[in-house]
Image 1 (cartoon, rainbow, N blue to C red):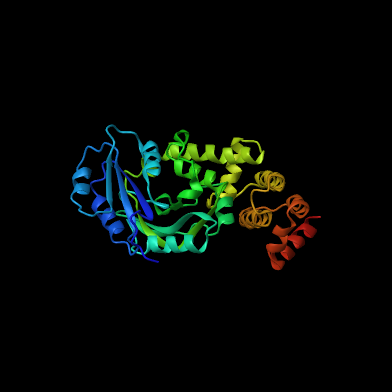
Image 2 (image 1 turned 135 degrees about the vertical axis):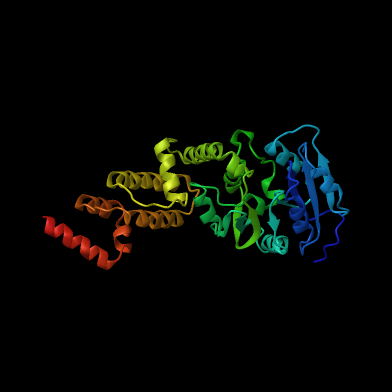
Length: 341
């Protein structure tokens, strides 16, 4: 397909605020993409450093430069960019990250082959001066992403490309500062399908001025609010306990030990969650049940003293955990139970 269009096929939305330190490297990574039919839309949110000079030093016809007269903040600037974007697709990019050369081409290929997909992210590799490089492997398919959103944001914001027709009038919500992208993915999950390319196509720079670092406490609280909103959507109680259970089940948190009484409560919650979904029919019931069972099995193995009463409770409520725990483990548990009688 020819890329010679008067109208750009992709709008690359890059908000700028005092980004002089890493900006050039980020710009170069976009201008060096193998897929070339895009506009690079800079929105300078009243920077006070040399960001503007860096942008103006480039002479590329694909660059569109907009300057806010006053600082609007990230969310308003992002929404302004969504409104200004001329492309059929909108790619997000941050001022300090590095996109790999084939990122856009591979995302466009996904959209062409899958017209039902409205959001396409990628895996990404975090790096920085004082950290070891690590690639984040987010869920790939739409159902897995939707379910994981119950506990965390599972799309890397600067990796995402959006089908403009799919997002329609949806915008970032100012009531969810520091986690506005997470809330956006949840809203989009209700109107379109999501996908993550299982390949690292962006290098995510970690440094002391990242929003996730600077506003970590606010981001955590806002994330809990978003989880609570999803519970409300399913018709479940939006309580601190239920939010905590969602983070435990779907948040990717490492579990070192777990109390028996808490595990019983967790299983009770999962039963309520699955029953609510049977009524709402939002998630694939099979995938939700399999995801929950897999996670419960991991947590079950962290319980040090597995009393007979717990085993009987699980057999009644979550028999798959006992089955999947393995024949040898079950035999040992049964022997211990008999000896205690």
